[in-house]
Image (cartoon, rainbow, N blue to C red; front, top):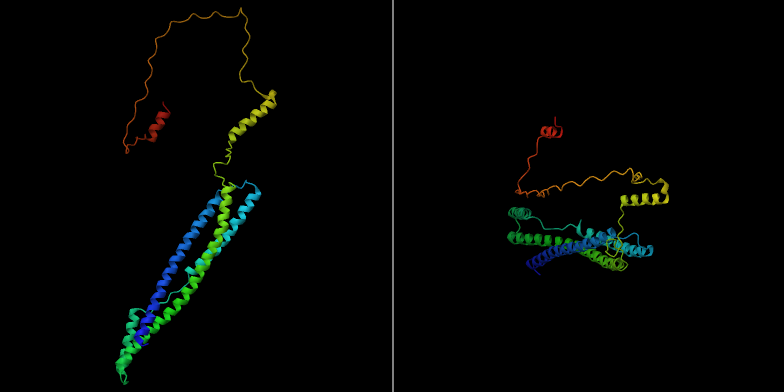
Length: 269
């Protein structure tokens, strides 16, 4: 295998590892989306959990709920390891490579070695090939580590999915949702409770009850006054009309009177 074939091989491996790095990053983002969905279900169940249910049902639900949280936490830790602090190696920039080639040319111009042009081309190809090889090798090791962490994190997500499914089933079957319409929603009215308490107290102690109306004095038949003669029927008053409708535009604003005017209206002389 000559230098050109070696350069092509290392170049292919270098770009393959860069493409593989992007694919791993996309898979990590997908796993993060699954974690977000999982914790959304966690937050809903924990927020609407009916803590007044039977202790056995709550304990059974919380056991599977805790197992699922533990598994998902391990998956999150491994996803963070696979995403951050994983350096990617690249070959030198175009300016640095060009400067190195120029230095080689200056070196061979001053050199008295035969076939200096052939040696120059070989050195350039060898340098670029070694750069591709070194970067591809380091990126391969990094991608293998990231891929292992990603695989393990997805395995923990699958492990946590089983207790999550059981906890969700218990949450629905045992009706642990406090916002469920099947629950008896007790609304406490403090004012009404105080009124009922006072009425109960009055019924138990009738002596403390105050009469609501004063008894009218008894009058004899001699003290009764003759009933006044019926007056003439008054003319029927005209039925009052309701106020007319108001119409205003959306940008219409009532004029607010000044403070002094309000004081004059409230305190007439």
